[in-house]
Length: 251
Image 1 (cartoon, rainbow, N blue to C red):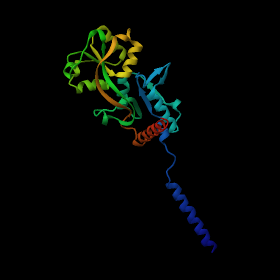
Image 2 (image 1 turned 45 degrees about the horizontal axis):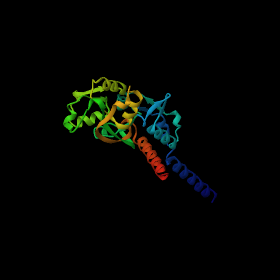
Image 3 (image 1 turned 90 degrees about the vertical axis):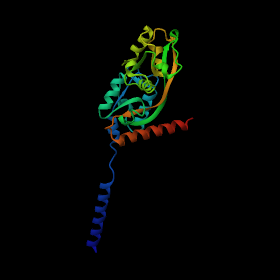
Image 4 (image 1 turned 120 degrees about the vertical axis):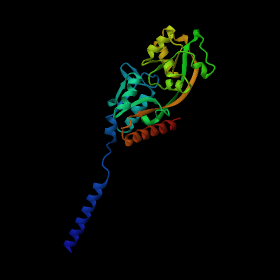
Protein backbone atom coordinates (compact mmCIF):
# COMPACT_ATOMS: atom_id res chain seq x y z
CA UNK A 1 0.00 0.00 0.00
CA UNK A 2 2.81 2.37 0.93
CA UNK A 3 4.65 1.60 -2.30
CA UNK A 4 1.48 2.32 -4.27
CA UNK A 5 1.03 5.65 -2.47
CA UNK A 6 4.63 6.63 -3.14
CA UNK A 7 4.17 5.72 -6.80
CA UNK A 8 1.08 7.90 -7.07
CA UNK A 9 2.88 10.83 -5.44
CA UNK A 10 5.78 10.39 -7.83
CA UNK A 11 3.41 10.38 -10.81
CA UNK A 12 1.71 13.56 -9.62
CA UNK A 13 5.05 15.30 -9.17
CA UNK A 14 6.19 14.14 -12.61
CA UNK A 15 3.00 15.33 -14.33
CA UNK A 16 3.25 18.67 -12.52
CA UNK A 17 6.83 19.10 -13.66
CA UNK A 18 5.86 18.39 -17.27
CA UNK A 19 2.98 20.89 -17.15
CA UNK A 20 5.24 23.59 -15.69
CA UNK A 21 7.84 22.90 -18.36
CA UNK A 22 5.23 23.33 -21.10
CA UNK A 23 3.90 26.65 -19.76
CA UNK A 24 5.17 29.76 -21.60
CA UNK A 25 7.93 31.55 -19.77
CA UNK A 26 8.10 35.30 -19.09
CA UNK A 27 7.59 37.38 -22.22
CA UNK A 28 10.78 38.55 -23.91
CA UNK A 29 8.91 41.24 -25.82
CA UNK A 30 9.63 44.12 -23.42
CA UNK A 31 13.35 43.36 -23.61
CA UNK A 32 13.22 43.22 -27.41
CA UNK A 33 11.22 46.45 -27.66
CA UNK A 34 13.73 48.14 -25.37
CA UNK A 35 16.49 47.33 -27.86
CA UNK A 36 14.81 49.13 -30.77
CA UNK A 37 16.26 52.38 -32.13
CA UNK A 38 13.61 54.96 -33.02
CA UNK A 39 14.32 57.44 -35.84
CA UNK A 40 12.39 60.65 -36.35
CA UNK A 41 12.73 64.21 -37.69
CA UNK A 42 11.82 67.83 -37.06
CA UNK A 43 8.10 67.58 -37.83
CA UNK A 44 6.33 69.80 -35.29
CA UNK A 45 4.00 69.42 -33.51
CA UNK A 46 4.17 65.65 -33.99
CA UNK A 47 7.88 65.03 -33.44
CA UNK A 48 10.69 67.52 -32.92
CA UNK A 49 13.59 68.42 -30.63
CA UNK A 50 13.37 70.96 -27.82
CA UNK A 51 16.43 71.77 -25.73
CA UNK A 52 18.04 68.57 -26.94
CA UNK A 53 15.06 66.40 -25.93
CA UNK A 54 12.63 64.67 -28.35
CA UNK A 55 9.12 66.07 -27.95
CA UNK A 56 5.76 66.07 -29.74
CA UNK A 57 2.47 64.21 -30.05
CA UNK A 58 3.98 61.10 -31.66
CA UNK A 59 6.93 61.05 -29.23
CA UNK A 60 4.53 61.22 -26.29
CA UNK A 61 2.51 58.35 -27.79
CA UNK A 62 5.71 56.30 -28.07
CA UNK A 63 6.64 56.96 -24.45
CA UNK A 64 3.17 56.13 -23.15
CA UNK A 65 3.03 52.86 -25.08
CA UNK A 66 6.48 51.83 -23.86
CA UNK A 67 5.48 52.58 -20.27
CA UNK A 68 2.30 50.55 -20.74
CA UNK A 69 4.45 47.61 -21.90
CA UNK A 70 6.78 47.80 -18.92
CA UNK A 71 9.67 49.71 -20.52
CA UNK A 72 11.18 52.86 -19.02
CA UNK A 73 10.43 55.57 -21.63
CA UNK A 74 13.51 57.51 -20.52
CA UNK A 75 15.68 54.69 -21.86
CA UNK A 76 14.19 54.75 -25.37
CA UNK A 77 16.86 55.44 -28.00
CA UNK A 78 15.17 58.20 -30.03
CA UNK A 79 17.31 59.81 -32.72
CA UNK A 80 16.33 63.02 -34.51
CA UNK A 81 17.90 63.79 -37.88
CA UNK A 82 17.00 64.34 -41.50
CA UNK A 83 13.94 62.50 -42.74
CA UNK A 84 15.76 60.81 -45.61
CA UNK A 85 18.55 59.53 -43.35
CA UNK A 86 16.12 58.00 -40.85
CA UNK A 87 13.89 56.58 -43.58
CA UNK A 88 16.75 54.90 -45.44
CA UNK A 89 18.33 53.62 -42.23
CA UNK A 90 15.14 51.88 -41.13
CA UNK A 91 14.63 50.38 -44.58
CA UNK A 92 17.92 48.52 -44.24
CA UNK A 93 18.55 48.08 -40.50
CA UNK A 94 16.91 45.44 -38.26
CA UNK A 95 15.34 46.47 -34.94
CA UNK A 96 14.69 50.05 -36.03
CA UNK A 97 11.55 52.18 -36.47
CA UNK A 98 10.94 55.48 -38.28
CA UNK A 99 8.10 57.81 -37.29
CA UNK A 100 5.83 59.54 -38.00
CA UNK A 101 5.45 57.85 -41.39
CA UNK A 102 2.61 58.23 -43.89
CA UNK A 103 1.26 54.79 -44.76
CA UNK A 104 0.94 54.81 -48.53
CA UNK A 105 0.34 51.96 -51.01
CA UNK A 106 3.90 52.39 -52.31
CA UNK A 107 5.35 51.97 -48.82
CA UNK A 108 2.97 49.25 -47.62
CA UNK A 109 5.33 46.31 -48.16
CA UNK A 110 8.50 48.19 -47.23
CA UNK A 111 7.72 48.25 -43.49
CA UNK A 112 5.58 46.71 -40.78
CA UNK A 113 3.10 49.19 -39.34
CA UNK A 114 1.66 50.22 -35.98
CA UNK A 115 -0.90 53.01 -35.68
CA UNK A 116 -2.38 55.24 -36.85
CA UNK A 117 -1.30 58.05 -34.55
CA UNK A 118 -2.70 61.05 -36.47
CA UNK A 119 -3.54 62.16 -40.00
CA UNK A 120 -2.12 65.09 -41.92
CA UNK A 121 -2.80 66.91 -45.20
CA UNK A 122 -0.06 67.76 -47.69
CA UNK A 123 -0.23 71.18 -49.32
CA UNK A 124 1.74 73.59 -51.47
CA UNK A 125 3.25 76.64 -49.74
CA UNK A 126 4.20 79.68 -51.81
CA UNK A 127 5.00 83.36 -51.33
CA UNK A 128 1.81 85.41 -51.46
CA UNK A 129 3.39 88.18 -53.55
CA UNK A 130 4.35 85.73 -56.31
CA UNK A 131 0.64 85.03 -57.00
CA UNK A 132 1.08 81.30 -57.60
CA UNK A 133 -2.30 79.87 -58.62
CA UNK A 134 -3.20 76.24 -59.26
CA UNK A 135 -6.49 75.59 -61.06
CA UNK A 136 -5.79 72.07 -62.34
CA UNK A 137 -3.32 69.22 -61.96
CA UNK A 138 -1.75 70.35 -65.23
CA UNK A 139 -0.77 73.60 -63.55
CA UNK A 140 1.43 71.63 -61.15
CA UNK A 141 3.70 70.69 -64.04
CA UNK A 142 4.28 74.34 -64.94
CA UNK A 143 5.93 75.49 -61.71
CA UNK A 144 9.12 74.65 -59.79
CA UNK A 145 8.26 72.75 -56.60
CA UNK A 146 10.63 71.89 -53.77
CA UNK A 147 10.31 68.65 -51.81
CA UNK A 148 12.11 66.84 -49.00
CA UNK A 149 13.84 63.65 -50.18
CA UNK A 150 11.71 60.52 -49.49
CA UNK A 151 8.84 62.67 -48.17
CA UNK A 152 5.31 61.59 -49.07
CA UNK A 153 4.42 65.00 -50.55
CA UNK A 154 6.82 64.31 -53.39
CA UNK A 155 5.04 61.02 -54.07
CA UNK A 156 1.74 62.93 -54.13
CA UNK A 157 3.06 65.20 -56.86
CA UNK A 158 4.38 62.31 -58.94
CA UNK A 159 1.01 60.56 -58.67
CA UNK A 160 -0.55 63.77 -60.07
CA UNK A 161 1.70 63.61 -63.12
CA UNK A 162 4.63 65.80 -62.10
CA UNK A 163 7.87 64.40 -63.52
CA UNK A 164 10.51 63.63 -60.83
CA UNK A 165 13.15 65.55 -62.77
CA UNK A 166 11.01 68.71 -62.47
CA UNK A 167 11.12 68.63 -58.66
CA UNK A 168 13.80 70.37 -56.60
CA UNK A 169 14.90 67.89 -53.93
CA UNK A 170 16.53 68.75 -50.60
CA UNK A 171 17.19 66.91 -47.35
CA UNK A 172 16.18 69.77 -45.06
CA UNK A 173 13.36 72.27 -44.79
CA UNK A 174 15.60 75.25 -44.10
CA UNK A 175 17.12 75.01 -47.57
CA UNK A 176 13.67 74.71 -49.16
CA UNK A 177 12.39 77.81 -47.34
CA UNK A 178 15.50 79.71 -48.44
CA UNK A 179 14.91 78.66 -52.06
CA UNK A 180 11.34 79.93 -51.83
CA UNK A 181 12.39 83.27 -50.35
CA UNK A 182 15.00 83.77 -53.08
CA UNK A 183 12.56 82.90 -55.88
CA UNK A 184 14.52 79.88 -57.08
CA UNK A 185 11.45 77.69 -56.59
CA UNK A 186 7.76 78.61 -56.81
CA UNK A 187 6.29 76.34 -54.13
CA UNK A 188 7.07 73.82 -51.41
CA UNK A 189 5.10 70.57 -51.07
CA UNK A 190 4.84 69.48 -47.43
CA UNK A 191 2.44 68.61 -44.61
CA UNK A 192 0.30 71.63 -43.70
CA UNK A 193 0.70 71.95 -39.92
CA UNK A 194 4.40 70.97 -39.73
CA UNK A 195 5.12 73.26 -42.69
CA UNK A 196 3.43 76.19 -40.97
CA UNK A 197 5.40 75.56 -37.77
CA UNK A 198 8.71 75.31 -39.63
CA UNK A 199 8.02 78.50 -41.62
CA UNK A 200 7.22 80.37 -38.39
CA UNK A 201 10.50 79.19 -36.90
CA UNK A 202 12.95 79.82 -39.75
CA UNK A 203 11.47 82.16 -42.40
CA UNK A 204 12.62 85.77 -42.50
CA UNK A 205 8.99 86.89 -42.81
CA UNK A 206 6.48 84.09 -42.15
CA UNK A 207 3.60 86.37 -43.12
CA UNK A 208 4.74 86.24 -46.76
CA UNK A 209 3.88 82.53 -46.97
CA UNK A 210 0.52 80.94 -47.66
CA UNK A 211 -1.11 77.69 -48.78
CA UNK A 212 -2.01 77.73 -52.47
CA UNK A 213 -3.09 74.15 -53.11
CA UNK A 214 -4.07 70.97 -51.24
CA UNK A 215 -2.65 67.55 -52.11
CA UNK A 216 -3.50 64.29 -50.32
CA UNK A 217 -4.28 63.47 -46.68
CA UNK A 218 -2.57 60.46 -45.07
CA UNK A 219 -2.67 58.50 -41.83
CA UNK A 220 0.67 58.45 -40.00
CA UNK A 221 2.18 55.39 -38.29
CA UNK A 222 5.25 53.93 -36.64
CA UNK A 223 7.05 52.11 -39.49
CA UNK A 224 9.07 49.08 -38.34
CA UNK A 225 11.90 47.51 -40.31
CA UNK A 226 10.63 44.35 -42.05
CA UNK A 227 12.91 42.11 -39.96
CA UNK A 228 11.33 43.17 -36.66
CA UNK A 229 9.36 40.11 -35.40
CA UNK A 230 5.60 40.31 -35.87
CA UNK A 231 5.09 39.67 -32.15
CA UNK A 232 6.87 42.93 -31.30
CA UNK A 233 4.88 44.96 -33.84
CA UNK A 234 1.62 43.36 -32.65
CA UNK A 235 2.47 44.11 -29.01
CA UNK A 236 3.19 47.75 -29.87
CA UNK A 237 -0.06 47.96 -31.86
CA UNK A 238 -1.95 46.57 -28.85
CA UNK A 239 -0.37 49.30 -26.73
CA UNK A 240 -1.52 51.99 -29.17
CA UNK A 241 -5.04 50.54 -29.25
CA UNK A 242 -5.19 50.46 -25.44
CA UNK A 243 -3.97 54.06 -25.24
CA UNK A 244 -6.65 55.16 -27.73
CA UNK A 245 -9.37 53.45 -25.68
CA UNK A 246 -8.16 55.22 -22.55
CA UNK A 247 -8.14 58.59 -24.29
CA UNK A 248 -11.59 58.01 -25.79
CA UNK A 249 -12.97 57.16 -22.35
CA UNK A 250 -11.89 60.58 -21.09
CA UNK A 251 -13.78 62.48 -23.80
